[in-house]
Length: 219
Length: 219
DNA sequence: TCTTTTCCTGAAAGAAACCTTAAAATAACG
DNA sequence: CGTTATTTTAAGGTTTCTTTCAGGAAAAGA
Image 1 (cartoon, helix red, strand yellow):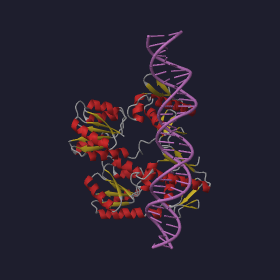
Image 2: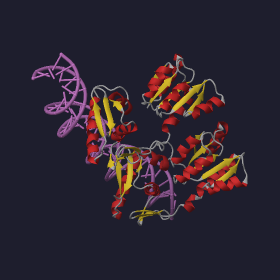
Image 3: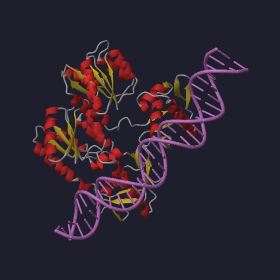
Image 4: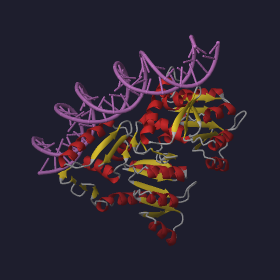
């Protein structure tokens, strides 16, 4: 479970990071809004915690841009302001929870856990692209049974078809942490997925953009 | 017995939770409508208590959506409005009981208990799928005697045949709490249920989707 | 063209998830 | 209170998925 914590108060950031890691989470820190946004958009986190008052770009802005870019990672907002209005406005913008500063780390941990553990009933809906139907509840692609990793990879492609997806992103999202000579994981799976697509007689295929990554296309 | 209580007034929610837990219930809280709906749809609760006035999504909406999705968990609605009209409209939408705010926790506890006790008289109807007949009054599958846990597990599968059911769900629904029980519980029972299906000469069988869960199928 | 880099693919090794059985613990019953 | 039935624990074996490896093919660069 990987968490992004965007916070400019270093001492606080470090303390919280320490506590979260003790709970078994992997934690990345960002100390300003721009850096935070960049990380958040990578879409590899299981939860993002945003302070609102930040240099360069506010937490609110980060949240807004994330949702614009269709990044659906659960978000918890932190702020000294506990006015109901602000709170509601954030929830409206797609924040999943809200915590007033100062807070107890235990409280934050509890909320993160609650968000992550939330039943996955909602994003489990089928994904379709062209003649492909990925049924995530049954782990099948056009009726063909898939393995867990295959589902994850195919999901990434079908969520952003006709878009280049680089290996780094796949490694980070599906294998977590930083890869090392592990590019072949992906090549191996791409190979198998291509076979699958052929077996299904789909018009869609995965093309490789040498040096950059792969792309699902049906053109 | 696990209960979901959807309520935005935190102080009230905590108080009620405390009292219900004293009665031996496990209680999950949700503080807004969306979260409440998501949790309710997971279909692992024995009873859902819905406040009507909620941020994001009203209790009424949650109830409606639950029934649309065929989630038949007993529901108690809470509201400051005690007008007969509203009451009737909710009961029409499939609520099982109605309680006006403010209420005494003891009153709520009593109603929850009443509701939870009731189902055993009602949903005792047989469930069938393909050549299988589960008789819940006698705890038999095609005449073969079952144990209590076997009935519960088989019920889950027969309620949603041809659908992947993951271990987490089974653990939460049958053993309660947060999947603290071992996966091996399930593996053990699946093994026994498979023997049973063979003995019965049923066409149906339980297939395992490695890393994801199990599925009852007859294809 | 020849060399280098990057990618593809099939097969084998390794790891993880799952199955099965039997015995121990617990609960239910008389 | 003893007996029986059910549930849980434990262990070893089995299967399947994932990773690794190695050799070859395609693209890019010299």
